[in-house]
Image 1 (cartoon, rainbow, N blue to C red):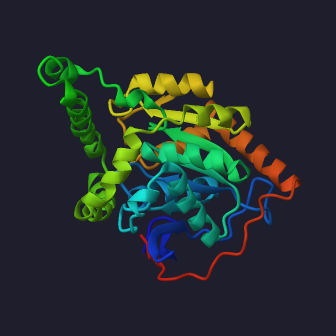
Image 2: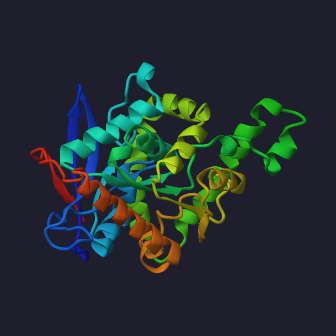
Length: 325
């Protein structure tokens, strides 16, 4: 038996002949801030590059249990067992549309987007393409803006005089290696590794299929879309690991200026939420800025409901579903 009262239930959506793996929290009787009978807050937890939705299941179950949200974890095309998109369709807009297909399949109403790293870019694009389906954005060590690609670390200083073409890439790879140690921190090491390995194994086997997505990320610049989200009044909460050298402090500063929001710094590196699945929930429940974000999001949901937007559509019949414990 699971120690949690909420679990993630996995399923596979087939769209245009391609499989999209996802999971959704099983708290089907959840309700919204207005009380029993009101539509629940839906959230979508969007993973980073070379990750998958399964790596964030512990966090999503915790959010569903403690905040009463319905949470969806998609595995984006090409990652964690989801089939890749044709290379000519690999762009941030079409990737965001894949998230919409999953949300339609489960009958989700407007969502709060938790976007980590590459998922932050997907969240920004989702909000730009579908503002009427966006309650808010929790932007976590994101890659939507270009500063993270401009490397200025020690590796760059050492290699630039001799190999300027590879210095930046080498510095990024070094940051990834050093950041991975953060995943080993904490008393729940065994459960962390169990949560990471299934999706990591699938990604290793399909590494060549994700390279077009990596190339797309290197060319991505969503600064205009970030400012458009601000202009539309979409609540944004930027949260950053204080030791993150992948999406480095310059990237956090860049996003802070564009979003006109101060960064909320938390302990950890680039993937701070993976070894600390309760961390995001604690931010939203106990910190003033987190609580203010939740309140603004609830107000936006009520505005949608008053305008006739926000009631979840009927969910599709489940396919091959199983409870993840």
